[in-house]
Image 1 (cartoon, helix red, strand yellow):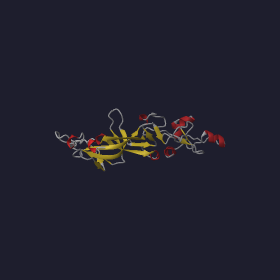
Image 2 (cartoon, one colour; image 1 turned 60 degrees about the vertical axis):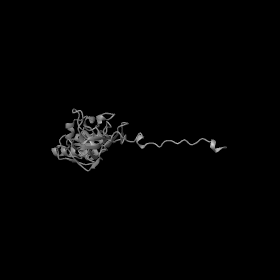
Image 3 (cartoon, helix red, strand yellow; image 1 turned 120 degrees about the horizontal axis):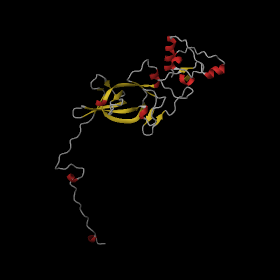
Image 4 (cartoon, one colour; image 1 turned 90 degrees about the vertical axis):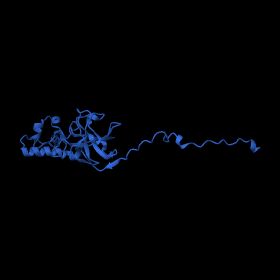
Length: 247
């Protein structure tokens, strides 16, 4: 075959770098690059001397002023802007029971929150103050509960509405989980706990008890009910404190 008759290679023009779609146009200047973010070890809440660090829990102002502040755990603190004055916090939200898919239930405590898998970035200016989120066991041992005290016993999956753990111990004849806000009394024989209302007793009478045996234990062992309504103030305080340390 005559090689002279073969088609000649077609030469393509060399691309002009300035004509590349991702190259800056020579007629306009390049956009200024943003200054890098700086990771901060701590931040002082505006208008106070309270210092927060990653791992601390905070109260964050809600956009709706009629709602209570949100509870969150600080994961990271970073500063942006040319002078580093724009401070933002990466947080992991706690949900209140009424904010979850299932809503608030009778065994949920007034100060109960769920640690969610919902992360967010917010301005540090929305932080109102620090708070404490205790474990369930630690919360029940508190001598007094302040406004900044909360407790958590569940993790909450915001996408599915599921909880971890998905099972929890139940008590009393009503078979409900323990609500630390509600008074319960303990049977001295079987060590189970009961709500006064579930055994036909008022809270006032329950606080006066020196001894208590539940109906089942009284029947099984042939014991006479030793429920006394003549407790001293000292035994009354001991009974309430014992309830708070039940778990």
